[in-house]
Length: 116
Image 1 (cartoon, rainbow, N blue to C red):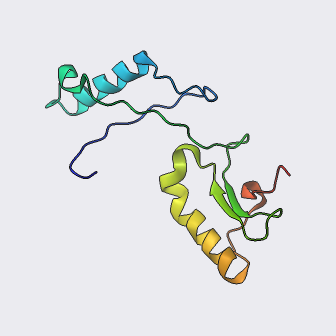
Image 2 (cartoon, rainbow, N blue to C red):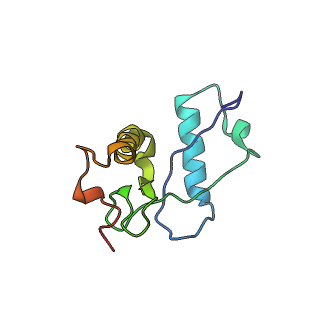
Image 3 (cartoon, rainbow, N blue to C red):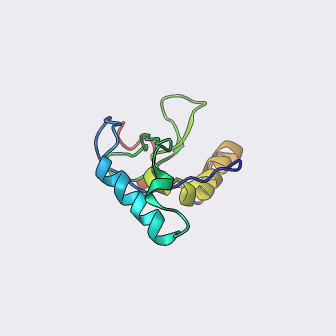
């Protein structure tokens, strides 16, 4: 990460609340110190803390496919914490749909129009 190190690993279902839970932050720091003993809690104080929202659908399944509403819109979102794992297969589906209009990996469970 451009000469920097990032520690991450908590998720809370809080709607749009982007406040930082101090207990979760202390737990994360303790885990870092436990697994990387060259770090102490003091090393991690006063470091930048970032929080963001994770896209997730009501049923927990991502939206991957072509929009029925807009002819030129393809969606690949709602992967929650699985974006890095599901990104390659989602990209393959979108590439095939944009190429010849079909993909053998299409499935109604991930259809972006399933709630329309």
